[in-house]
Length: 137
Image (cartoon, rainbow, N blue to C red; front, side, top):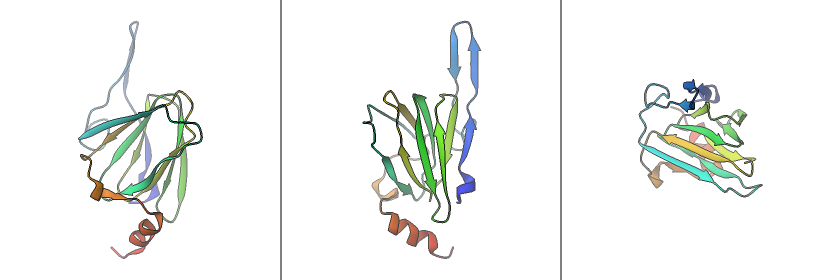
């Protein structure tokens, strides 16, 4: 996977007089079946979250409330994306280093994941990540 595989996903919504509803369906609105959902809130200003890559897990990150930045890195290129709408998801495939930062005070960050939690799926050292990425396929 490369940085070009990371992308914004416009999440479908229904708007009527009762309000808005955003629809997320695994393998339909996002490119994988959902096995885990988690969210972050009350993140102190100035804190950076994530700081890892996944070997197998795909994820879509959504700023449900407030805003945050996502920095993705494939060991060759980096890209920064600002999320500030509950109608937008950001897809991060496996083997992409990611960091979440610049959380607004009210930010709620929702993540849809393709796998159940496994500590074995995490690459937590950037140096290890770069070494793995430099190995031939």
